[in-house]
View (spheres, one colour):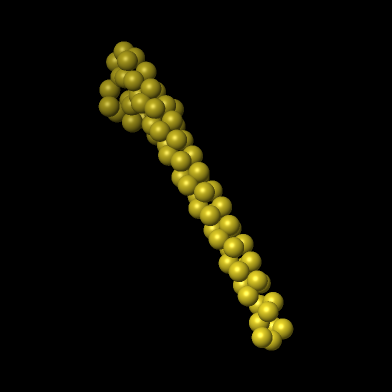
Length: 75
């Protein structure tokens, strides 16, 4: 067996192991980021619903008034 082949096999195995570890870390980070985005989206939806309920509970609010508040970034 040549000297090159003697060292090539452990190098290839180590390279594959390192790439596997990197890829599994990438997948774990991606999954965590997706959960964070979903969690933030749910929080935003809850906030918007709460603000809508507060605005609609005020007297004399109509659809046009609510749209104006939305356009002014108050809703």
